[in-house]
Amino acid sequence: PRSRVLLLAKRPPSVQRPLQEKMAAAPSAASPSTSPSRLRTHSAASPNRPSNAASQLILDDELRKMFYKDAGMKFQKRSGMLPKGRHSVFGDYPMDLAPNAWSTYNPKTPLALMKRSSSAPGLGTYHAAFVGTGGIPRGIAPPPPKAGATCMRPVPVSMFRVFYDRGDLPVSVFHGAGGGKIAWKVDIEKLDYGHYLPIFFDGAREQEDPYRFLAVQGCYDMMERGGPKLLAVVPQLIIPMKTAFNTRNPVVMCTVMKILQTLVVSGDLIGEALVPYYRQLLPMLNIFKGNTVSMGDQMDYSQRKRQNLGELIAETLQILETHGGEDAFINIKYMIPTYESCVAG
Image (cartoon, rainbow, N blue to C red; front, side, top):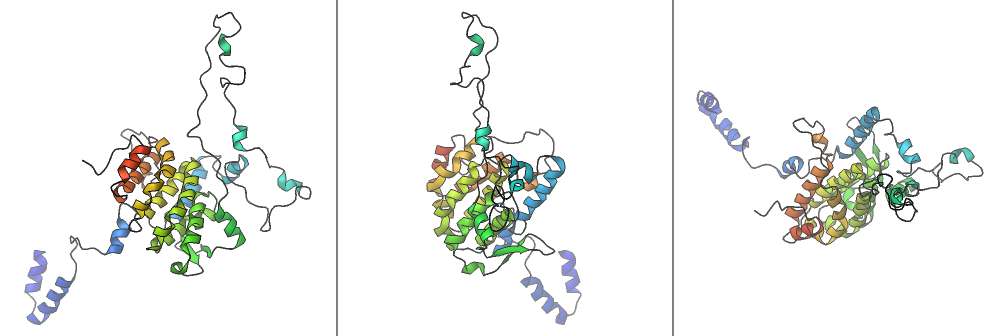
């Protein structure tokens, strides 16, 4: 600035020279030369920093419990939507020796408890309002049954839960003042990514802590320091992500999509390596692509959490296209016909 130059000119020559050298060496605020770590932290492709991505899920759960009565884990476990924990670290108690421990157990799965519509074929009630009166209608026919394409499915037990309960994972929760950290028992660079990273990706669909916190935070920590090791592990990460998407749980889908975005931008050629697996990953995104919140002129104060499923899907598809090479758009268009390119003019 001009005032700084005038102030510098009034000083003696012995003081001007060191100050001039210091001003020339200091980077300007408007200079585009920024350190790579700063760009990686504030880039649009990775808005969730690895230090708070998993801890934000815990805060959202506590906030959801304040507003919704059935938002707790106990209700979802009794309804069969979440896997139940074991009675002890050694397994479940025998049913004949601990009947109270099995009093709330329901052997029927949620899919078996789903009721069929009265108009479903095979029940003898199809078009029942028009039968038995000689063709004279006696009411309005029942509507067709719901397809249930967007209904949530039960979250299956992940291998991360099994390995963590057995004590085979080198992680533990770091109970510090900052929060949102993992105490790794070994150096991350020395881990076998082909063995551990698929397990952490499989545990990202968990909804119970500490399984979810350790799995999600572990994914971000390993992707941040994985480097060239991530490319060789990409084929093993498809099944865990596909299983998470098939649950149709909005919270699980948003969590895994954020991890997928970070994976794509974590290394070179990872986006191109995911192109052959679009047929496994994109069908569920096609179903929920239009699931956006229409608020009119109101303010969405929760947009910082990036939990709007439709907008997050559109953002994920754009990242896949920009990092997937020349064959990415045609493969995305094949699975999601309503997608429009963000690169082509």
